[in-house]
Length: 137
Image 1 (tube, helix red, strand yellow):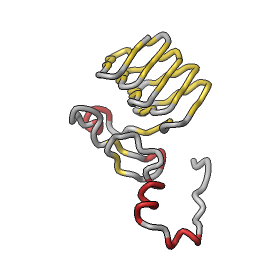
Image 2: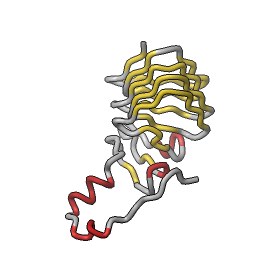
Image 3: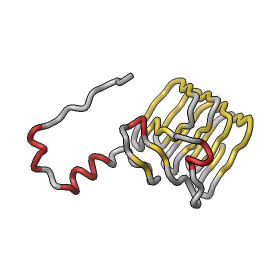
């Protein structure tokens, strides 16, 4: 289900390849990705050479850097957050908090990987990993 459609600008035909690359990388989170659209990005490497595809299957970027959300987030596939979220998070899959991610929420997930910051009660039913630069409060 699409929430919006991409508009094609006829005047952009003379755009340099650098400008095109920057627009494609708008939601880039510092993780190597194969872009197939905002919610279809596959994360190839997560951290320290570990393959996210091997660990979790397809990982989706839910909140890119600069995105701020307040509310309740529920999902059933692995998700990476690089923006700011306050409220509640529930998942039967993995939550990856990227280096730019800031979460002030009640978190209840299967697997939690923290490279950013989380403040609030946390429950990871299978595994929680906090990497260098990551923080729990």
